Image (cartoon, rainbow, N blue to C red):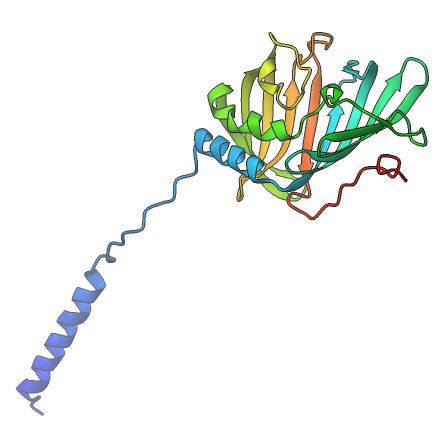
Length: 244
């Protein structure tokens, strides 16, 4: 049986079209691989996020227990809830020369600060210039960090309290920390290891290694943790301060 020429022509065209389709390269796209942010970009984002925090929970621990001073006592650890710009309530564990292990409470709202030198001890006014921490200065420290940190580098990734983080390391002079740690002494190199949320670039943890105060041992390390960022808080002066 003869096959009509028209059918043969259609078959040849179909075969040629199929072969051409199989040999085509994928169409190019305009999308380019997304580059991971560099250390300067991460530090700038950290500074912006710290400055924008409305509240946070802070913890600070003297990991090596080298006897850092705190209100003429020996600092052990601190927990604080902070409401921007600089209202906070703080519980500090210290060792007193007279009373041994005690917990000091400090509350600051506006231009008033009150303290109790042990749980259950009556509250008394505290001069603002005696406050060992100025949490408003945290934003200053990290806003200026890109200009003040030396040898900054991204050094890997790590899971931290269920959060994927990137690690940033570098060195600063101790007086760079004075806006936050108000009595920091100048002239010491402090190594920073920062854990930064890999997605949001929120600061989650910082290890400070080295002397911040002249009385510190050179092996001193302190660990600062940051949690509960931007959650609602209500910080009030103690009843005594309010006249109750």
